[in-house]
Image (cartoon, rainbow, N blue to C red; front, side, top):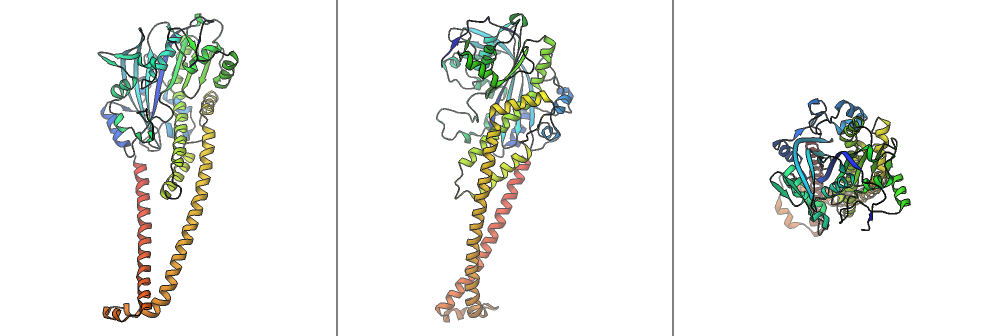
Length: 487
């Protein structure tokens, strides 16, 4: 990767750096209840808005999320999905656990102390889940570049680059060479056994079932010391925050782009500037961050929003994208001439997603709505949804043609049996089949009478088989839907 060392601006420092790392995963089919039971055993608390004791339980000292305000930020049909009142399967069921762990990330001879405040696990519809690790960097006047480098290293669960292999996490008496070990075998121990690796397909190197890429999503809040930035938050700072461009091999700040025109166009496309020049929100497929140089009190209120309504808005957009990708993947794997039940299931899933989860208007407040739309635009969810709707139309057309062809074939078979058995059976063998049956007469039958007898019994057998098959299919479909609702 080409890098451009930053030399034209002084290094900014932070008074606050709050990060939430989000890992989406697929849950093994039928394992939702088992996962929920395991989370409760491990001390995760079910999260409900009516429990106001949880408003300041998971976010660190000085931060609080108003449950009432968070609910009012969403329209009722969205709030029903995000903040269920009861154990509903078609909702985001959140389980949280406070950790309060003092840890340190070692980077090429430089240590960055951080504290893990809490861990969230969401059990969502469509066999999806989200794991969130909530972190605060504790170094005073932390250089902006080091915060970005921390985010870039911590989001990588498995070591891929040389920089990843040169970093490790120290927590108490334990040292973790990979973030994966720290997250999945320490913070959320036991979760890995519920991960569905089927989505990996033919991957050669990946060992975890990622949907989007091999790294976690980063939601970050950077409170920048105003004395370091008396004029503005520069385009370079915003670009680097979005791209997580921290430090290079020499330990100096760098940017992954050098052309001013490119950086300006990128920031115009990925930035929400309503509160500039003091506060900006940056979005791309891997990061959603807030940069602000406001006073501490205002910065705390902005951080609370990032923990509250904006956090759920990001999760909902991420959920939309993953489900749409999953539906597209299911369609690509269909054997169109064989998987008739899978086609019917896919039609049901697309209709369920469209009716219950994907709405144009979800946010009640204007600023939240604009940020939500910004994230959705960056993810390309609308284009993915249009593609899935076209898939639905194609599946409906194919299903209609298939069912019409099936009805015609069945009608032809039944007509032949009805005509042949009616002509031959009624006229030649029906009298011999009356009770009591004299089986000795079968020895005297002519070839045409044997044909009539065979057609009669085959017709009866076919009718019983088709009836039994239809009953079995109906029972299996109802059982599958009942299992889905129980999950």
